[in-house]
Length: 320
Image (cartoon, rainbow, N blue to C red):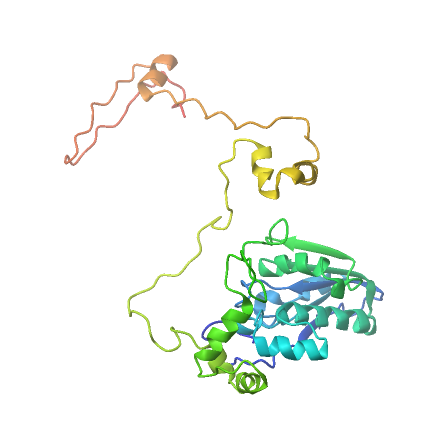
């Protein structure tokens, strides 16, 4: 399902298209870069203005961008789908990644016709697109489809925070994809977990698949301010040392994490920087400067004027 925004009227599962920008006059074979957009696997698209590739083409690079399924369908699971896949041998559950791999296969097979070098393909992505990089380089299905990768804000390793499995798994922190799929189907009165239920699921419209409380108008009608805080996703850690920061990778991976993230100072212990010294008061600054400045009396709340600090002309420049 492709949904550039939650209010987009043109939503369809018929979304698997890609774009190619190439230099007008450059001769190949040219380097190729393939862009994977972010959006938390719920929003985004290759048709937005900020996803355009003209600037890459101007610098002699072929830029390819593509859509992949989002939202309900990106990691959808259901017992009926698993049963069908067992008979066909097809993968299941990771449909968003399957779309990405299909696009990369297309690039490998066809980019030479656009003057691109199929052996010089760099895949890069941001946020969910960056995290997709981890899954692509660890997927045997994507082997040999690209040569270099760039991960932008997509975690330092495969994100285990989701912790979602296709099937019910003991100790899993979240319901399985199949459990979610069964619950979703039940919203439409679909309780069969076999071929009949699968046919009913496939008969649902795109609008039904993305329907939510906001679309139904089921929310409190109050003014809403939406925005993004600076560094909101920084996940700052209170660790006092670098090794304590690297502990998230596990004790057995400490040396590898240190080598990967801090190769130039492995033997140098890292400590928090001391807090800056307190700034002297203005009266102390004035005294040190040899001025005849006087200290302002304490301001009393409720008055209309606050006495200001003054110093004589003997002080060449006001401190600070």
